[in-house]
Image (cartoon, rainbow, N blue to C red; front, side):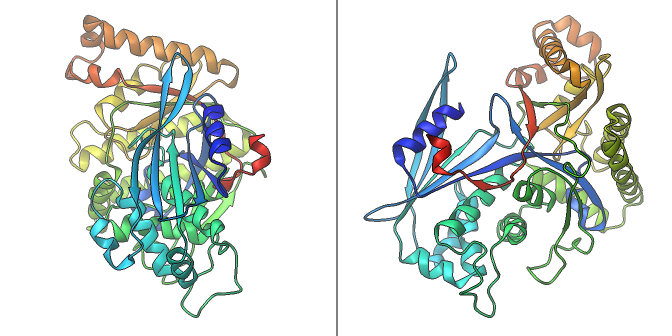
Amino acid sequence: MLNAIFNLFRRINPEVIVQAPARINLINPLDAVEGDFWMPSVAINGIDNILSVFLYIKKTKDYSKLLFYKIKNENNFYEILIEYEEQLNKNFEHYKEKFVGENKIIYATLYRLYKTISLFRERFKDSNIEIGIITTIPKQSGLGGSAAIIIALIYGLANYFKIYNNLSNLKENDFPINKDIIAEMATKVEDQDLKITAGYSDRYVICRGGLCFCSYYGKLYHRELSKEPLAICDRIDKIYNIKNLPIIVCYSGVSHHSGNVHERLRKLYFNGNAKIVKNYKKLAEISWKSRFALMKHNWQLLGKYFNENTKIMNEIMIDAGFEHGIGLANNILIKIIEDHPDVYAAKLTGAGDGGSVFALVNPNKIEYVLNDWKNYLNEIIENENFFNKKFYNYPLEIRTKLKDAKFFKVEINQKGVSLIKNEYLI
């Protein structure tokens, strides 16, 4: 897959190429109320499927345009095809009209750049460019796919127009464009411009890369840039010598709208719902305790915290009105693997009600557990009697949705959003 993507770049020969990774939240979902707490998250790449957003920018002659690509896979032969093409309107005054529809995050991102730095306005209007986007992160999978697109776009344009970490042309009300400001802008794109309730954790860890323990103190109300503190993002994989995490990710095949989940939880928290607030405080305690397990590389202890996380999140989601807690598909995927002798925990990543889960496993048995997990899922899907015996109170139709489940072996992404240099394409 990666070779097919790089072959496209060799053919197109763009001026800028960007990669933005996926992410998983190790303790979650504090996204809706993270401004009162702290949490560990990790930027990831897939080993077989790279789980990233790739974006390129190149000069064009007549007008600016946006291209989305799709990846066609036939018997492990990958082909990159244009899925959608659109001429980019440069009139920022009409961008808000584009905040609905298929490409709303693109136009909202361009609008946010327009509002944040005047030099971008001038250079973007005076240039004709082609922006191409390829994503291998499943849509609405709970792996940070939309955040990665926004971040890749901001980072790519900032580098193309030479405004990344450039302080020489800042005007009084401008902000310098660096990874922290990009994380903030990406949050504002969804939370303020598109009115999609979103947290800061996805954005900071995708920007920074690595395994991060982040404090969001003072950011509960999601105010405009410079009206609240920046997050404190502590990169812990290097100081604790964590070269990788023994994790297998499974996208359930059930897409979800994380903003709908976060919005409901955020309202209940702000309204002081006693059970919700109490459980979030429990999650916060588990979160800081998990750091000690991580520094010891004590995966069994970390698994204990993850299991507590799953129990609490099911309670929170049920109290918030989600009938099946973190979601039917998620709970099935967790239950079929959680008792495996080489699995220390299986838990949700993202908001729930669909999306993805992951298993923390014996580092020496990753392939073994992966194969067993796939086999257990196939048994659930194919054998109705087996399904009814294990999940007697679950609707049978959920098995059809689980046919689209995908499994990923992953590794820690070290760079966060970054440029791909031409020498890597040779």
